[in-house]
Image (cartoon, rainbow, N blue to C red):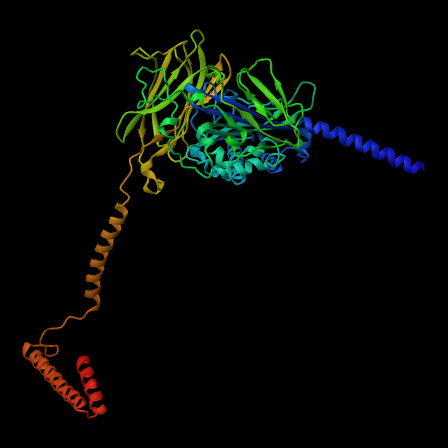
Length: 617
């Protein structure tokens, strides 16, 4: 009896400890989806997945919520902090406002990767960087293994660690940054991304991630951030945060899959602005797209949300919606809606086994369709200048919309080695002024390129006065590549990575410019074929003549056999008379056949053999 009581007590204690560990584990992981309608019939969907793992458990290979496949790579490469970006499209800051997450989860077009590695020397850091890129290339089905020395830089002013590194020293910590602007982001990169989640896309907000919808977006970015966090008075944890942001076109997303080809609506269904003076039955001025902001969750993502992930923190609402408080929102049964005090956002608490659906009907008041986007701290656009295939220039336009606040930032470019910039031509001037202003540029870090070894690194710390537009320009020279270094689509051009802008004040903010397409002097790739044909012909003629001289034997005309005209004529006459004789015999045989007489087989065979012998001679 005493043993039974002891066993029951032990079982109760074990069960209580399991419950406490399960509740603690639930608080270490949470996920959330934020939906924010944007102007011009757009919708921003931000998926965020965050999990914490004790640093001591991580070092003991007890990964818990941390994906083991990624954790082993980081341990093997000595990575202290990692940031990986997969981006596609262009963020329209003039229409959509400030970037989500302050631009911290955004990358340039293609793939970006930067990490802090622990190494004693630069050579060891390069070796670990090569190990890291090759391993991540296989994990995410991307071309990260092509990030070699020509696409790798060591930023000095642009990036700062986001995590807590109490034991980090500048001597044994190396920051490396690589970019692949030509990388095409597709479903092959989304599938490994979902495998890093605890619920693997089987439950929760991850069930809404469909490759057809994600890569049909006007702009999308997938981010992976791994960093250590050391709260005051608590144990350090290793935090992994996975983020997916995409801007969907509502009209295009609501198009049924069975009818993917867009067809124009009939004339009587066109939304027209009737306030125009020239409006008529046969004249239509399109109205603002903000009026078409009615949608459902299943229309946008092609499916409903399958409950919640059982491992997520219940204190964090899984879905939030940013719409004006005056708009009506309908949702599924068994869902609790909570409105925040800002009167522009509402969150939904969902049961684990309930399918979740949101219905946003057409607004009654068109003036309160969407929440007004936040104005970004800085607008930036970049383009090529000049003409010709030998030289060119780059112009970056930086506009500060604030009327009373100056913006200070670091502008960084990672250029390929075949773009040799002239640093003395770099200048900055304010719009409306013809002379350059030296007070705009505070500090410059320049690392020149080495042909086929490393690219050009340019970092400029500068400022933009309030309500001003600054033009940053410089010239460069284009190199000529070897014909084996040109890609198959060389006439398309070469992708140049986006510039990274890190705003230092008045607030932390990041943004990327668009990537560029550089046209290099491209040879005529049919010339190798022409050269091969010409050299083959010349060699054949030379070799043939030399071979005849060395092998053939030359003799005089009287030393050879009789080949005069008389002898040749005599031989031809003999052959012709023989053929005529044989043909006559053949006709005689045919005549006997017509008269009913059986032809002589031996004579026919002899005739055929004679003709064959004559032809052989």
